[in-house]
Image 1 (tube, rainbow, N blue to C red):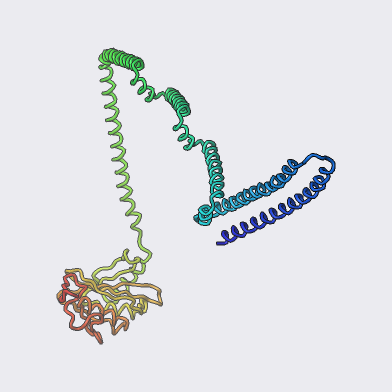
Image 2: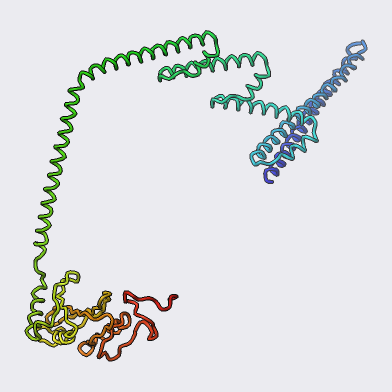
Length: 447
């Protein structure tokens, strides 16, 4: 909208300036005509007095001069109209270019062109000239960019001589391109496909191509024959060397067998050495544990005070930090536990762990003690009957055994006699079975 307002303002200013210039020009011409009339009138008055001849023709001619001079304003008016039309055309062209850049349709230009006749013709001429200039610029741009000028080609296609020249130029360009491609293929060692095709289309070229093909086939046959001859000659030499070749083959086989035997012997020797090393390794690993002196001390003290038949077994448990482990008999379990706590040399005053295990054929209770005075530990194990797992409770000796024994009873069904409150702590009293037993089957399948 602002562009249209500016255009209207420019038009109005141009028209006002043109009108003012025309008025000034007319005023100046009118003043000049008045002065001319004043000068001519005294001359006309003097002529009758000087000459006796009638001067009517002269008078008749002089009044014609003012119309000639009056025609000058008409020409000026035409010039002014042309200038106005030019100014309007320029303004319209500027507005049209602006609208075209903005993507709008030049509505006012169309309306003004529909209303005016002469201005429309002038505008059409100017437009044609502008279009011609634009086409020339586009053609020059395409030529600079290496593109084919479409309009030029179209105009040349319409004319006969130009079309022939264009066709000749195109043919020449194609021929040059084909020649360059053929030279490139020849340099690269490839077969010139286009050249072959063009030769196939022409008679003489086809004959040349056939001759070349025949020559190539002949050369190939000659090469094959020479190769076969050489092969036949080599066969005789191979037959002559067959005996020597078999000997060499036998030697190679014998060498391979010898190498294989040597490798097998080395492997066997290495295996023997490994076995010897493995036998030596356990001997090296058979060093006594650092806790072995403590185990020997416990066994000595127990046997001196309780007898040599109270223990079923004793060992260093490698799977549990080399802890000294004592295996008590079923009837000496409580006695040994009590001795471990109250003996002055042992003094295991802390029970750190108690749990049971189902071994399917029997059950086992494992107890771990620690002596804060001696900073030593010991483990006590006992095997019990799986069908009737009953064992003395250690709660009277260590109060910390209460909950571990309840857990063993809840999950394995081991009953500890002398326990102050033996009950199920995880499962309800109405629970059927003991989940940590190997033969446990859930009573309630959904659970």
